[in-house]
Length: 370
Image (cartoon, rainbow, N blue to C red; front, side):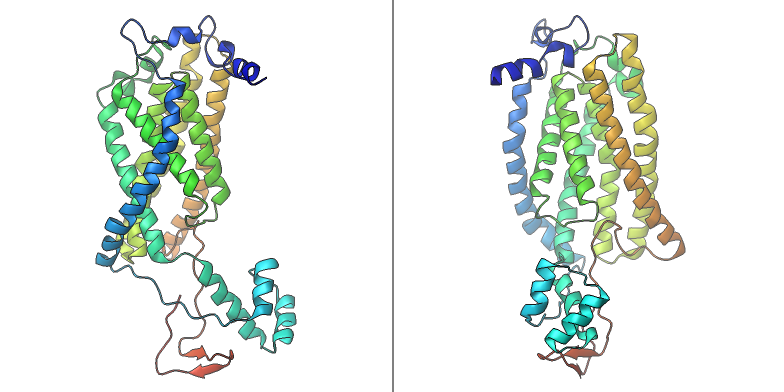
């Protein structure tokens, strides 16, 4: 049964142009091709990335955060209340006014005290700014290295400048060592992002992130097996370019370097819109939709690859919407947060705090704001 499924899955007619078989992609005549078995290494490589990330965040990112003045905010203590905790866990983190009124009667607290308890309880579960800084530092380090490595691997290739050259001789195109490592490292990194997504900072686009990582891995895996290596490297380079600027802007945002953050964000927005909504669809997708038909008739793999590219394009449009919302805030106010982030809520009082019974009392100074 398994063997039958495997034979069907790897059927030549699915993934390769007419009159070509997998035997045509075996190493010979001085040409070296990608092998599906090589993809297995990306999983242990993802684990290695997680180990390197752990060391990087503690040995490099944390000292950098201290140099930039990034510190965790002091969070106000949440008084233990079993009734409110049960509602928080099993019902809602953001209770409606009717629920607040009911809980206040059960707990002999004022509605304002109940609201304050839930606000502080939500803040306690939110990741701190130092955790966000570490994650952004790690992604910045990888995307920067990947972008530089990608440019070094592609700048002297004629098909980098003329995408029609990409399909000449396809699929009998030998894979270069630089392309091999570019692919393997990118796939290992995306696997590590997928493995760590449950304990990373959870953002509002959590589901879209999962779809993006899966679509990217499927796209890279297919292009690897079907020898779409050349176009795959272009897709990776286009994506990494804007990510470097995004992560840089986040770092300065966490460090409260507002002018630097805003300047980087404007540059990021421009680069994102140009690379993801202009170059990606009108250069890369056009190249994969139109030019291959000059060399062979369409087949399943041709449609599959382009559909995955369109999935990525739809995600780009979604993120462009979020970016433009942030641009609007930047132009008519100030850019103070990432639209995707779940930010801490401010305490309403600047000179009041609560005693252990939940009653307000005066202090000599103001409390730390979240």
